[in-house]
Structures are given as C-alpha cells and as structure tokens.
Length: 223
Length: 223
DNA sequence: CTATGTGAATCGATTCACAGCC
DNA sequence: GGCTGTGAATCGATTCACATAG
Image 1 (tube, each protein chain N blue to C red):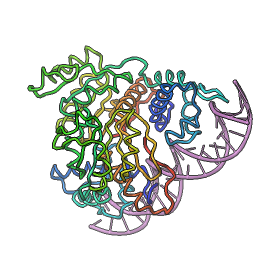
Image 2: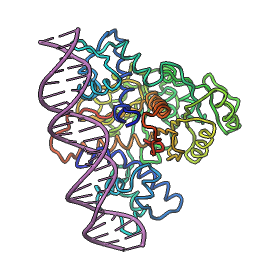
Image 3: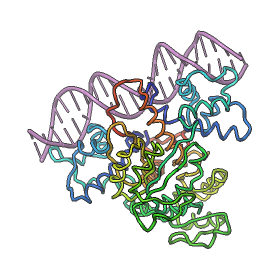
Image 4: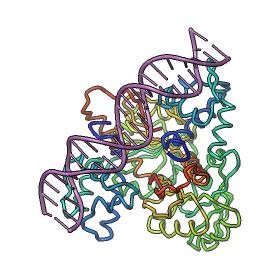
C-alpha cells in the first residue's frame, strides 16, 4: 500500500496498459472489465476495483474507452513523458537491452551506456557510444537520470549500485543475480532470469503431481 | 496454493536458494532466519514459515546449514538435475539469453535454438547452431524438452507458443510484450522488460509524493 | 540463552452482492 | 439488458506470541 494504492493493484497497471494498447491497435474503441479480466487471467471485479482507485473513468453499460484508458494509465505510470534511463554493463545482455525497441515505445529512452572495461569504452552499442563508468556521476546529474538498468556481473553489482545511488539515481532495474542493498527510499526491482525459469519449472513440476486431484482452472498464472 | 504450498511461498524459494549459495561461497556454514530475512527484505518469521512447509531442517539455537538448505531447495525446484530448455528467437535478446551463463549454473541447459528467419538458420549463436523452427516439434519430443524461452517479436509470440505447446512443452518463459493464451495445464511466466521499468518508475514516483508522510521502512521491495 | 516451528490473531487482497447509470 | 463502482464478506498471507529444542 503506497500512496493509497494497494501494491497488488500497482503491479497490474502495466498489464492493463499493455492490453489496452494491443486492443486499440486492433481498432477496438472500448473494452469491458470482463474482457480485460479474461485475457489477463483476472476477475472482472478485480479489474474494476483496480481502475476505480484512480477515479471513475468507465461508463456503465459501455465499458472503458481504450484511448482514455491508455492516456490515464500512462499518466499514472509517468510514461506520458519520456524518461531518461542509464544502462550500466555492455556485455551480451547489456547490448541486447540497449537496442531493445520496447523501452522506447513505452516512454523510456536509454540515454547513456557505461562500462568499466576500457576495451569496450568508445565502441558503439546500438546508437550509443559506451562511456567510461567514471563519467557516470557527471552524466547522471547533468541529464537528471533517475532510473538505471544494471546488466553487470554479480560481483560488480553492489559496487555499481552504490555509485548509481551516489549519482542521484532513485530506481534500479537489476539483471545481475545478486541481492542489492540500498538506502531507504531507493527502489530496486530485480529481473532474475534464472529464478524465473526456476519458478516456471516448479510450476510445471507441481502441476504434474498435484495434491488436489482437480486441475487448477487457472490457465497460466502470472502474466 | 498449489500442492499444499502457498503461492507466495513458492515464489520466494528461489530467493532463499540464491542467498544460501551466495553465503556458502563466502564460506559461511550456517545461516539464521533472521539473517536471510534481513538481506532479502522479509521478516524472520516469514522465512521460517516458508522453509517449514518443506519439513524441519533448521536447528534451534544454530540456524540452517547452508549446504543442507541448498540441496533441499534444489530438490524442491527440480534443479538438482539438469533440465533441457529450448530457445525460440535468435534476435538480439535471444542471442544474449543463449549465452547467458546463469542458466547453466542453476541447472538449466539450453539445448536448442530456433528461428524462422532462414538467414539466421545455420548460423552460430554461442555454442548452438540456429535451427529452422519447422524442426521444433521433432527436436522437442526427441530431447524431451519441457521448458522453452520465447524471445520473438510480439506478433509472432502466440503462434510460436501454440507450436511449442503442440510439441509437448509445458512451461513457457515469455519475453515478448504480448499476453499469451495457452491451454489449462501449461504454465506461462512473462518477463516484461518494459513493464518492469514502468513499475520501477511508478515506485520512484509514488515515493516522491507519498500520501503517508513517514517514509516506508521497506528499503527496496521485490528483489 | 539462542533460534526454530507453529497455532492464534491480524492484516491485506479478492470476491460477492447489489445499487446506480447508460 | 449490460456494465460500472463499491460496501460487506471471504479468503489467503503475514505477523505475533510462545512452546520447544539445542
């Protein structure tokens, strides 16, 4: 529960936005809570309750207007304006992320790529030139960068995180398989690729030997 | 709640394993629930309750033995033996994932890489030769592949998912920004890179203008 | 004295049931 | 008739309090 919004609700906003955008691309003008719920594996009540936290922008008898919904959700997420992001670590994964088109399309722009390997500094990655990590504090402050992506090896992650926080970055998206410790007030989200696979493997395993004989009606959980 | 284990608990098992492995590498022989809780941002009670679902393997007055804990958690996750994984989509992201060392280290082995682009078929990606997606059914069945990673464009994702399910795959790790619909009994986990950034941006934004004047004690949530 | 394991109590999130609007 | 918004009820997860073991 942050700022009056339940955590669980906050985590679903992005899903609603993604789905609304998909539907609009298909030329659909409005969408009902029922429809959103079905495709996202939620209940209609849940969708309505979530959306109602941000004011009433559905019309009884009609549903939600896709355009309006998208605009509204973007404002909530703060992606109605472009946000600059720094990327640290120009290894395989970092290079892939640097040229990942999805970020741009959703309101994020990677404006700087850093690495501590001087062999990589000066080389091009997508449209960016890899910069020496020593320049990080200067660049982050100059460009008012609040968000950063960490795609560095696990051993380096904590050190890089400290530098980023020192440079005024307030949110870290961590791809390194390491648990970061940061000061209160700094947000960290971990994308743990191996852990995701583990979870998936576990889900598959548990479905094979369910204690409950009945199959879970729930088709494919956490999308 | 699957097979007697609360969902929330299942999602934390991987975290415990990761932390136990880190601690063992540092030469630590035992760990207390208190210590695990602190570094993972949980409470000690929660850790104990979670671990207790799988039997009693902690020692009062001492804590949990790292070795024993790791072995136990690996068995639960099914990563005590190597699991073969297929990767579909040899674009930037797919290539990075194909040579991501973390999968191997945690019990997963990518045994085949597919793409539908004939320009890519036959080329090397890491240690793998990209295969025509038409061979997918044959290879998946031959190698008894249960898990697959999708790193294809959003438009192609549903079609590829259908092919994978048809080929007997039971768990999909989806990197495409699209919501997949799959038959009941198939597990899907989505790694939505943009959505992760959105969540992070939202967390930062909400912390800036908290309705509750007191700062959340919770340092950096979902690790 | 330290640390686990667990029933009981609390807290938060989901679902139900229905009033109100198009 | 179809669909939203919301208090009340239910359900699940977290925390508390404490009995028990090293």
